[in-house]
Length: 182
Length: 198
Image 1 (tube, rainbow over the protein chains, first blue to last red):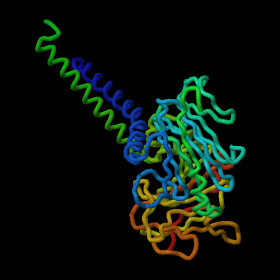
Image 2 (image 1 turned 30 degrees about the vertical axis):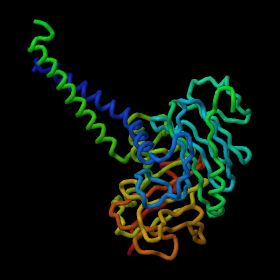
Image 3 (image 1 turned 45 degrees about the horizontal axis):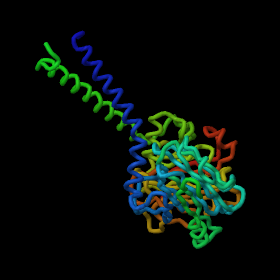
């Protein structure tokens, strides 16, 4: 039996390594597939406005059929990006950001924003923004990873018409910031 | 004997093979555990369950399950997602049964009850209605609501069950009150789910 102890230990170490490696990689793999399969046609650093979720197409993502989702596949390797747009206060609205391993690291909703506009600058964690002329009103959001997903949720409330909701969310703009300029 | 002797090569190949077997077994076990829809430490309240903890500050298994079964979820302060795959008696929900869902409007900014199949997709039905929410639901004179989850349409508060076999419900609570967040296991703001006569 002693003769096989190293072999058994080797298998056990392999089991533990395989188990934890898979668990660590899984969230990255899921977001990678989400970005490259479901959002394959969505360009990086542009906001894609999805229609209200329905039974088809099947996405397996447990969508909320009440929400108009607007999705941003961000890549900050070329510099920070600035997001601007309108915030409604008569229906639920939120912006949330997810890093490459799919964890949510930032969320803000309409009740937490004063006024009817938002102005976010999304930058890589640790990046110095000293060379950028940023508006004082901008909220700086640091992403732990260079890539990830930003998600706007807009409740399709019966208090607002489809046209009002679409007009509102299509005001969202994305701008890649260059050194020394807005 | 050198490292490159045939005997040593065979020995190291055997070690590599054993390690590889271990890696495959461990990975397979992880994949098996990731399939479980019970995300993290469950908070149970009758038929409903949610996971305990913040979506961002949790263990790897929970993070993996969240990513697979509920990608892009939010933390408990913003949203609580309760799921129910069975009625109050513990019988798995099925689209060919009729259920009566009864409750009090919860203390949240926005709330809804949505039907999904086991692949986390919305359930197809002729009405293209997948949920009821705080705006669209009709309350009784007592301030309570009663939803009928069934294939056949009902006059009021009908939630189509489609024709997909096993289903589950998600009860979303956006911006829940602090009192609700603190009493998830005991709150009476989660509706009852009982099988009803067809």
